Length: 118
Image (cartoon, rainbow, N blue to C red; front, side, top):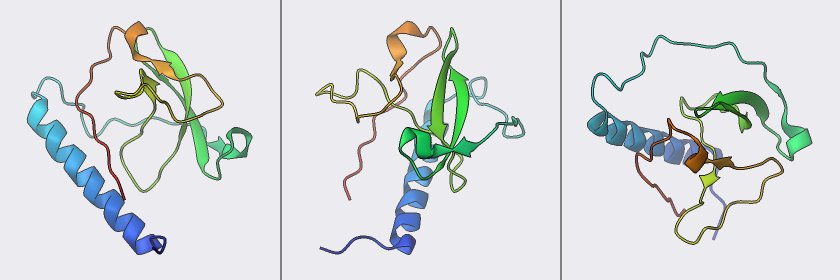
């Protein structure tokens, strides 16, 4: 089996984003949607300190706010983070910083679970 090339990875990422957008647009009402024109200035830093070759940004998520370092993916409009508990088998991907505990956030809601096997 050969590793996917950059075109394959891009195609799979675009398909994943399209799928997620279609699922979210069906589940959210007009009052739940975030305006597309909103933006924020984030300071990106080198991710090598966290074991990543990507750019890293720090954002606050949840209520009350919990600061997390996230990979800044310029090829997508979505950002992902691990939330405890991590799936059915409760196995989280190893990471250096604490994992977001969704049970401590009053604004967290699970919209769906998506697992892709390539």
